[in-house]
Length: 153
Image 1 (tube, helix red, strand yellow):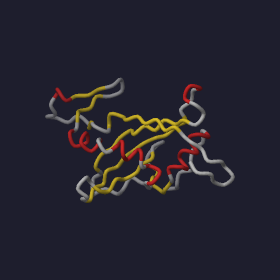
Image 2 (cartoon, one colour):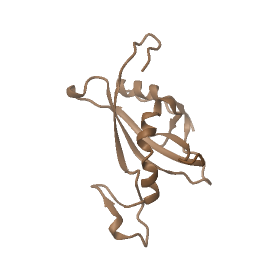
Image 3 (tube, rainbow, N blue to C red):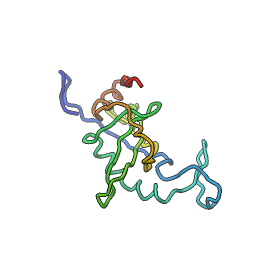
Image 4 (cartoon, rainbow, N blue to C red):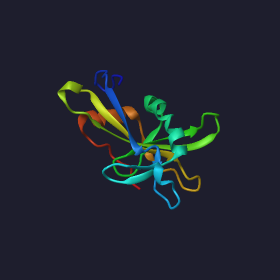
């Protein structure tokens, strides 16, 4: 993070994790039972489209400082990827949260960014974005253990 407003430049280690909603969907009647995927909270089914798109998530996570981020539901944030690999229009929503990663072995300037879900947004529904927030602002809040002010609905 560059120096700003009297704060020195800060190097932040960003550890990234991925939730199963990045490559699974809600189980529907007729889904192949062999494609079921479960954890201790829920059971879902493998989604081949989400899986293919999830291959972009590593790059998207690395580019978050240059991307527009916004508030989403609960404690999540979102960024939209608007083009596919061929340059065609696409609304790929990437939902994530970010928290300070505590622990002496990880250092004082480490955060855990978890991409909770990522999928193509329904073109008939509005964007899930509320307000705008820069990724460096999110990093600062995570390191301080504070919560950014969400825009009013």
